[in-house]
Amino acid sequence: MQFIDQAEIDVKAGDGGDGLVAFHREKYVPAGGPSGGNGGHGGSVILKAVENLQTLLDFRYAHKFKAKDGQRGGPKNMTGASGDDLIIEVPCGTMVYDAETDEVLGDLVAPNQTLLIAQGGKGGLGNKHFLSNRNRAPERALPGLPGEEKLVRLELKLLAEVGIIGLPNAGKSTLISALSAARPKIADYPFTTLVPNLGVVRKPTGDGTVFADIPGLIEGAHQGTGLGHDFLRHIERTRVLLHLIDVTQEDPIAAYHTIQSELEAYGRGLEDRPQIVALNKIDAATSDPERVEAIAQELEALTQTSIFTISAVARIGLDPLLQKVWQSLEEAESEAIVELGEGNLSIVSSQ
Image (cartoon, rainbow, N blue to C red):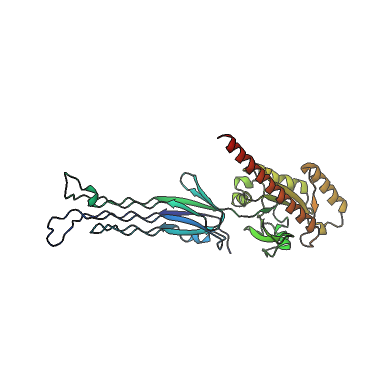
């Protein structure tokens, strides 16, 4: 399935129905008072996050959405029927922006979470509302108000806890296939992965953790070069980054610096995200183990952390790597709880 992670839609809420000018008429009551009802309210446009959608592909073909208008008021003080709301389903993880101002309208993360993006117009008042001591037979009613119209930009950010990053052909798709039941397209050339792949990896407790194989980044990605911004944004929601480096390439250290530079240039906290570095394809470097060890030691000096040596295709070294991932996730969760607690304390103390 083609992965579509951006879309623009034009939404229009329903207009309110017009108020009615009418008078009460019945036998023996020749001069009844005003009885025109109010118009019904227009339907609103609402976005709803659902679990069974993974892309914004549907919006490639459907750009315009309009909710139902409210109905005109009726005689005998009857209010017109309100227009039905229009519910538009989007994948969980969809960010919603006003396309004209870039204002963030909402972030739909949880299943069944909703966001009102265009308010329906109010119904107009019928002539009964204009009855007064000076005007016993008002012939005035108000039209319904127009519903809001808005150009909205949708951006899907994957809801994965672990993002696998690295240069093209570092072995990211092979790793996610080895760790999970995901079966991404794999071949021995750069940019095999043109869409993010998701895989669920089971913890020892049995709980599932979502890993995202982010397509290969290249120098200049933060400026949109190559796959650029289209995929850097998917890393934003991850809690831990797994940086995969092909140990068989000419300069693995330069490859590490390239990715780090792109994360720092893109910003948004990516450069500070907990990161695990692993040298991949050690099965193809058995003829020169000293080189692998030297590269690992240089990276350890750079990162001040342990460097893992693995082979995704031969499934070598994956268990220690996963143990480190679980540990990093627990630490990230603990830090988030501490930050939340500190935030609550500051709020309490300010009262």
